[in-house]
Image (cartoon, rainbow, N blue to C red; front, side, top):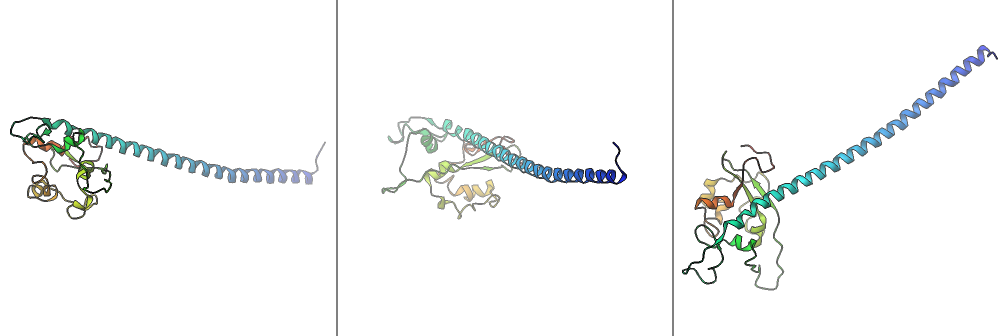
Length: 215
C-alpha cells in the first residue's frame, strides 16, 4: 500500500512530535529522579559524616579517659606512723601528700558537695585538649570531671578562664607565677614537683591526641 506525499509528511511530523514529547518527559522526570537521588546521596553523606564525627569524638573521649585513668595508678598507699590516722591509708603522691584524685577515682572517698540537703550536681564529663608549646613535651588533657567533682563552674569561669576555645594564652611561666592553673595547683592542689607530678596533666604524647597539632 502506497502512502501519498501528504500522509507521509503528516506521519513524519507525528512521529517527530511524539519523539519530542517522550524526550521532554524523560528529561523532566529524569531530572526529578536525579535531583531526588542527589538529595538522598547528600542526606546519606551528611548522616555518614555525622556518624563518623560522632565516632571520632567518642574515640577521642575514650582515648582521653584512658590517659586520665592513669592518674589513679599514680597514687599509692604509703602508710607512715607520722601520718594522721584518718589519712594514713589513703593513696599518696610522690611527696607523700594525699592524692585526692586517686581516692575519688578508686571510690575510697565520696564527700558530699553540700552541708544541707541540696542535691549534688553531677560532675561535667568534658575533657579539654591543650597542646603543649614545647616540641617534646606531652600534651595536656584537662578533665572537667574531677574538677567539677570538687568545684563549681563559677570558681574558674569567667574569672580565671574564658570559656571559649583559643581565648586563653596559657603558659607554664604564668602558671608558676600563680596564674591560670597556678591559682590552685602549687597552693591548695597538688604540687608541681617532683617531676612525676607533671604527668598528671601532661599525659597525651605528641600526635596521639586525635587533633591537628602544631608540634
